[in-house]
Image (tube, rainbow, N blue to C red; front, side, top):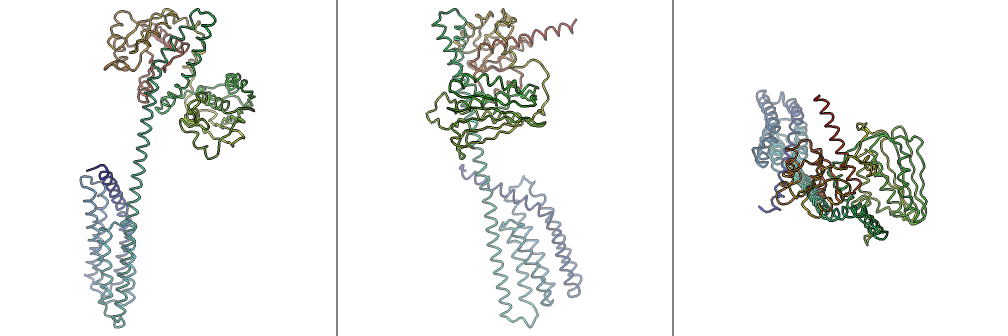
Length: 596
């Protein structure tokens, strides 16, 4: 069976299953209606037909309703049979039900025109209702309709009423047949619509699956491209950091400084790619703390004062009267920073202003500029990844087009909302609203991942003389990291894979391990880490890798492993090493105290 035929069969099976589910629902409703019909028929025929005939027919009709409802109710779950087989059972039940009801015609043969008319109205009503209850499925519809309409024709064709001339009887029979034809056509249309709805649903599901597959492929591509670009950049970063720490003449020092700035720009763009992967992987934690909004935003403005001044822009901030906020400070500042960065990039003259206002429940921050503005028909597109207005030439100075995509994801993480007011030539205003007090548990600890980044390298005394094991398959990366860390006063050993790493433990026990995720041959960073911890369970380990796929990030997060993305800033790396060493030392002290 080819793919197209397989898809069609799958759609048909879903349609058939849905029809069985619909019949199951009707099985709970129809018996009540049919009981009323049986009672009415009995009322009309009592006194005109033998009691035993009436009782026999009524008993058969009610028994048929119970039997049909019981079987229909169970059919959807009888998956050992195909849907076609189960629908054939439903069609046979419909035929049997129609025949039993049609037998009522024999009780009406001798009744007057009023009774026959009432009988006809009831039967025609049941037939019309079957269009809906069967969703127009022909075998079920026809199985009921043919005997029931046949009974109506029988009642009029064999009526012992002298007033009914052959012409009148012929006209009545023609009308019944015409009604049957109309109902048949309607049933066909209803069933076709029912099937088409499932075909459309199947197409939508296929399109959604294709979109999800494309997104997964994009994520894999971003992760692979990010890793392959980060490797050489990480080496350059290590060598550049080592170079800037060396004694150089003024000209060489300026060149080294310029190299460092350029690599930071490139690293920032790669970090955006990693951020998308992390957000897609849902591994970015939210750690609420209470902090001062005004202090936080004022510091962010200070970061951009120089770039705003170069463009002749005025930069202002209207303080919030109530200046406390309880949310993730790092993520909140990232949102404001991205919006501020965007505003300055796309504003050539005028001003950029930030305003914060707070109620008891909500903090609202707006970032408003007098820039180029965004056309109304483009405002839904700006949240998409890699989408940029007026940057066809892909000017690197305008970034990758990930800023707003990251902002929307981060805002959602904080249970907030973001909106936009913009007009071409009049500027743009982004408005972010987040809960004033996060509903997540407040982190009362004093240490955080970013706290150590503010500590000067010279004050990180506990890294001096520490033994570090660097595990990486790239020799240049290992050499560059060794050179940098040794310049900072650490002792470094290298390993290119799991075997070398485990052997190094027997020679010299490291104080901390820096491990890549992509290692040669069958080696894997996580397997290597597991092997090391089997030998030394309390060994501090930091993953330093360009691998940013959601699966890897999720696994690292689940294992409680710290992840640092390549290329690494020397200050950040040393601060994280210091943090891990301090945590290990405190744990050792606590263990020794408990043992004593």
